[in-house]
Image (cartoon, rainbow, N blue to C red; front, side, top):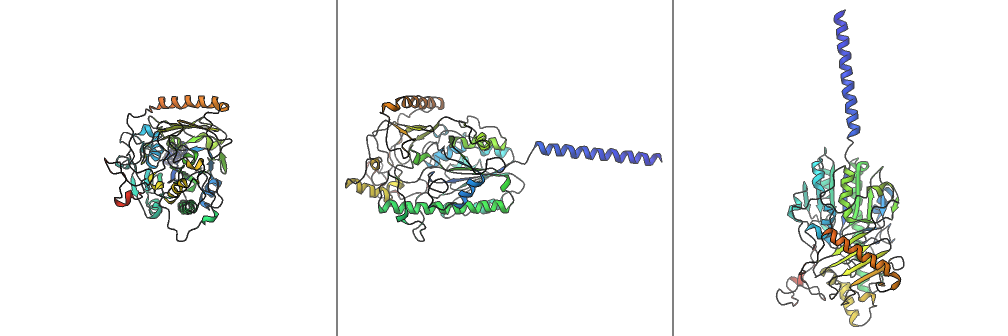
Length: 482
């Protein structure tokens, strides 16, 4: 009998022990929730208004519409520059281009620059960059996998990589497209008809511009279709509810007065964030956000510490309350991409202020745009004196040293009010704000700027030491990295 009592007591103690262990595990499970996954879509040269639901209703983007309905859309998100590699370097580091060591096109990020994947990998994440890549070899080593290319648009490996990932780890996927970068998809099977295109007022309404805009919109629809395939795969894997999906672009549309400028047409990026149960579904946030805030936000969501030297701010607070505010200003810069440049700017909800440090030079678009049909048509129309003053902007030199635009009354930034006394107070304030930012972030103009690599009229490569355009290899034929 005593033996049976001892057994019963022993069994009771074991049960209590197991119950205690189970309770501890349950508490630990609550204290350490499952880490969220991340899928970051990065378009190449897509302006804010060139898709549904932001602007054009003629461009069919059902995947982006669905993201907007299921997550939050940011209507005032701005890039730190409108140049591919420098812009992406800023996103990955949470630092402004001039502070990354990779401020100019094709400059590789130095090894000492920490990027968002490093603390994520320490936290147990599997990290992969798939598609478009031009951040250099040192940065490749900071991902578990980097798979470059992948057919037209760079999409071929997006789904296979998502399927082949380690099943026991949270994941971070940087899915970078080459759409809608030039060259645009072939004209065969063109979805958008040139006659249906709405041409912005800073571009001439001619056949060449309409034709290239139509092909550009075709590329956006191809991008959207592949975004949709990834979202479907997340659903199939049962990962949608635990995956933060972010969509944005690295620069504005590849047309004159857009890409490589500090105008909204170059910097205003589409931005969607879907975080089920956290980001207000279907909401639109009108607060200022900068692409430099991307890395801090991702790390905040993951519960990781900010990167040392981070210059951005987490916008997690906006996901819960789209009426909140995290910044008063968004800053931007334009450095060398094919042509000598040094411009700085600051954006507020109402004003855009731009300082042109090399005002003696025209605002020439990238070489692949210069070689395109639209720019060459504009050259012809310029000689025929058929361009409006606004359409002459990319040829004008010298330019104003300062530009100020009142976005409340001038959506396309066509009327420079820097000399208008009614805006003198705003001009003085933004001058000071920009100078303070430059001092605080160590932005100092170099003694010598990188010179032009291409002719500004033809986009053909310049012969070293002669300053004359040459036609070697087709005069520097279009390269995807431009």
